[in-house]
Each structure stands twice: as structure tokens, then as C-alpha cells.
Amino acid sequence: MPLTLHGSPGNLRRPRRRAYVTRWVGDNVVYAERPGLISPDIRGHDLAPGDPLGGEMFPLVWTAPGIDV
Image 1 (tube, rainbow, N blue to C red):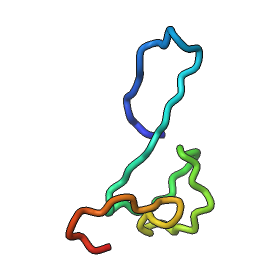
Image 2 (cartoon, rainbow, N blue to C red):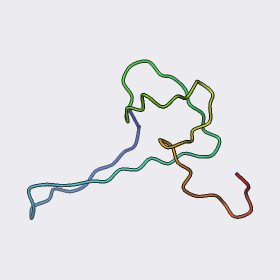
Image 3 (cartoon, rainbow, N blue to C red):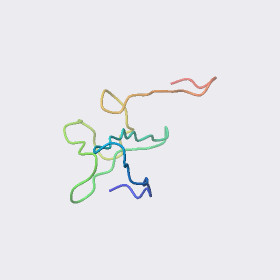
Image 4 (tube, rainbow, N blue to C red):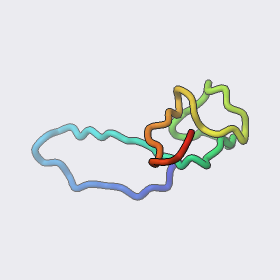
């Protein structure tokens, strides 16, 4: 479970609240297996422990200028 503190005040005008969550990682992040449930559930990715994140499930969205990928 991510350890991010977040919150908002109550919404008195509408009964429902919607949120959009994204998770960003650096280019040095590798896959590691963890016991128990994780969020988000990322099963079915064909990654082995130590593999860099990438592919359809972990797309590259930005590269610093001058960096070759």
C-alpha cells in the first residue's frame, strides 16, 4: 500500500466525489515481488524480479532532453 498522505474537505454540493490517481516512477526502478496484496494489483506482467519497469503496463511517458532510451 502506498504511504502517501492525502485528503480533502467534505463535499457539501454533490453526493459523490471522484478522484483520478496516477503513480510515477524513476527510470532506475526495477520490479520486486512482495508478499501479500499490493496496490495496484499488477499480476500478469511477465516481469522477473530485477527487471526494469516498462512495456504496456508501465509505459514511458517522458524522457529528459538529451537522454537516449
